[in-house]
Length: 124
Length: 168
Image (cartoon, rainbow over all chains, first blue to last red; front, side, top):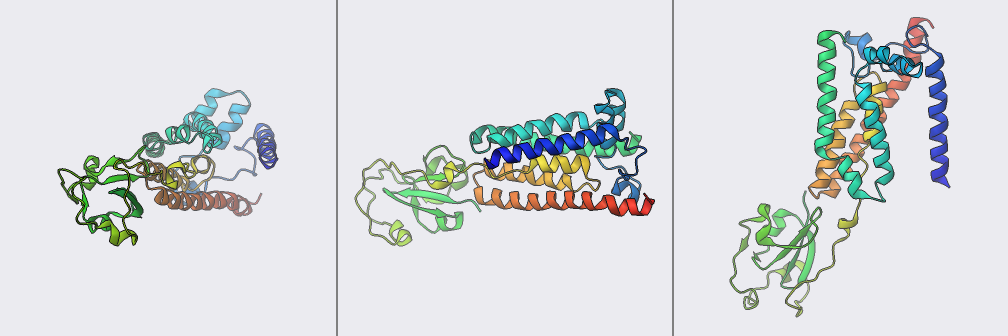
């Protein structure tokens, strides 16, 4: 019962945000302020551009989304994988441990850090 | 700290840490289990426990000193020669949450790159759990959760602050 409620709530939240990100363009809307790190230091964070990328994706512009934040194309599927792992944590702890193996997480962490470095060097 | 359960001449005790094991005068006939292992093994097969036990040729006859008595505080009872101890509770415990979902969300969506710390702790949880340190994994899981909460909270309160500056 409680589980169903949580799932329904999550779907509702995702739908609401989906509509917001579909309708409003973060490039021009004041509802989407600039990233804090970029404002404070002038350096982009690994997530910079992800809101514009989501807006572009929802409007079917894959190329623009890739230009805004390329890491999203790895992070989003990875996020889905982790969500699936979360459903398996108690039912199938072995599957959970496999999907959260130290090697996999290290790979992801290294990817984020390299992406962070490169995008600030090449201004991606 | 890694915790070990031992079966010394049929008497099961634990958890003990490595320092305690060194004081116990274990022999090569002792069986050991720790979280992360699928079954009990002889102490001689544990790479990290080499050198803390004395080698006995025939464990059945080496009954004179019984150091485990001091540890368990109980008199030693005759047991079947082959130990069949029950698995300690920790074996069945699932991995504590790695918070990876929140860490990734924070990294993608929440301005300051605090989510990266969350990913680092997710790795700690996984690593400690795989090594059998369930307690350590739990503590890393909690620390990681706090970093994710901090990252998302800052990401959320940043918006109205920033918006007020840009005059929206």
